[in-house]
Image 1 (cartoon, rainbow, N blue to C red):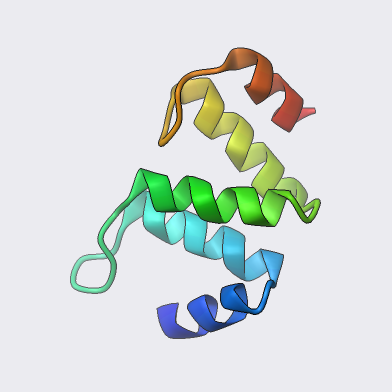
Image 2 (cartoon, one colour; image 1 turned 135 degrees about the horizontal axis):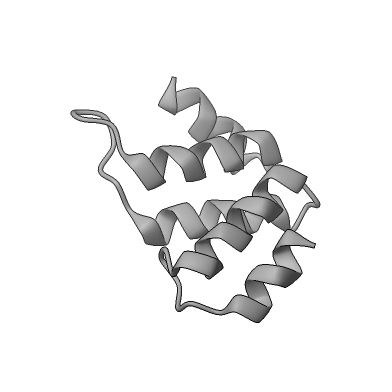
Length: 80
């Protein structure tokens, strides 16, 4: 499954990018090591294409400081 998400994300599909972001956020034993940095990277790619789910996710990351410094103003921008 990860292979197909990775392939689709590398081709620029925002739904696949946000799916990879979630995978990297949580990790998967024996499949994928969790990485907040990668989670933010893929969420930003999807959000830059206007995917609302990814924009909300980035707001959450900035609000809580997951993979980024806490920035409440930026969080509100992404939530908006």
